[in-house]
Amino acid sequence: MEVISSVNPTWLRDAAVILSGVSLTYYLRPRGSKKRLPLPPSPKGLPILGNALNMPLENVAQGYAKWGEELGSDIISATALGKVVIILNSIETGLDLLDKRSNIYSSRFQSTMAGEMMGFDYPFAMLPYDERWKERRRLFVQHFRPSDMSIIYPQAREFAQRFLVELSQAPEHFHDIARGAKDLAYMSEKFRSAPFEEALSKFGTAEGRPSFVSVALGSVDDSNEEAAAHQRQLIKDTAAMFYMAGTDTISGSMLSWTWDMLKNPDIQAKVHAELDEVLKGRMPDFEDLDDLPYLMATIIGDRSIVACCADRFVVHCVPHLNMEDDVYGEYFIPKDSIVISNLWAMLRNEDDYPNATTYSPSRFLTLDGKLNPEIRDPFTIAIGFGRRSCPGAHIGRAMFWLSLASLATLFEWTEPLGEDGKPIDQPRDYEKGLLYQPKPFKCNFKLRSAEAQALFANMEA
Ligand code: HEM
Image: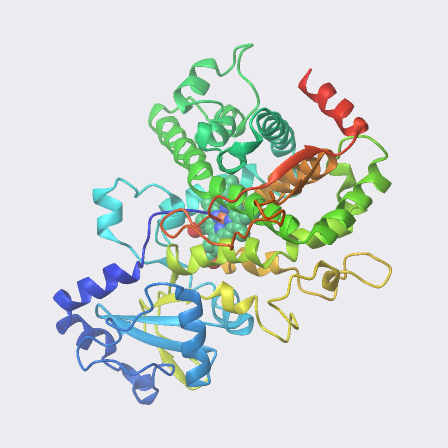
């Protein structure tokens, strides 16, 4: 998901220079019986500024992981802007604090600037652990249960079809198409049934199509106008979360996977072979999910999908905030610490994932080719922790799974050749900024066979 930065390190550094001192003393003041316990290990900082000037500004996740290695601890701390920042570099610390102690680690840091100046105070991903957040999250979860995909699957099919048709029309614009740049609002509009007001005006008429908005509006009780207006506002805010949280996780995942298939033609060939064997000349659908374990392994094994999501959460996104003083092992964690789960480091831990940096889908499979339940699915970590864990990842996963399965059913793709007849040299790179996405890369798409051509013609009709 993508929301405005809550702890942008540059901002932290600049602001710390101005605001150091008083608040730092306040926040680090030991309290009560925990006063003798130290904060988790911390890199050396300056007397008043703390670590404000040495916070990593680029490759933040890697920087935090390095601090952890140097300090020999998977929980570390830093101070800046009068705030304590706690960094969790292992799955275990994430589960211990953010999951098991979710009752106190589930708030969010409030950036007044983001909320007031940029008008971003409504996305519930950013809200503190209060009634507004609870109402919105409840509404979201109630309508998008993983056990009921009846709103999602039709949208996912439409999304995949539209993606393939656009791709076939302009394969050279693959990057933009995957990012939905041509019509950035497309997906959220789909979920919202075009702007909320439009859905509202069509609600109850023959024109109204099932969507989150239309279904949720159906349960608004109009007998009390004030309560109904409040409900409608909730629905509107919750629908808006789709656009903010969903679009670039999905497109980033699609781009990353396509890149991996491009760079690993042998793996792409195995994906094709599995699809051919299972589908026998038809398009994939959700009923095929369990019969395509190799495809799934290529997706969950794609470090870059995870990196793409994870780096965003480390750098730009929504760390947790603890609402009470706490003690973890021999460390004190003061109330209002900013707690960052370094998903990037967590998903590279060698205990769970030996040779974690190698792209090896087969590591997720048993010898007889099924998904191995003993290997932790990286997505269960990539979605975050506890009461703030991602409520929409199953939606994202369904959207990009079907799109990628359909893409590989119809197309094969290779790296263009340079003048010397060899594949061009294009290193992997990511856009840095609010949209953490793979940078554009070149690839040649081709319909795989006469059968694929026929399937595609059928789909276009
Ligand atoms: C499939 C790829 C996705 C991944 C890996 C992912 C990951 C995450 C993570 C790590 C968080 C923060 C969790 C935490 O604070 O502990 C999050 C929050 C959130 N995500 Fe996702 N997400 C994905 C897709 C989506 C989609 C498609 C939607 C909406 C349709 C969505 C909606 C949200 C919302 C609303 C939150 C805020 C939850 C809260 O603060 O209560 N996500 N996501």
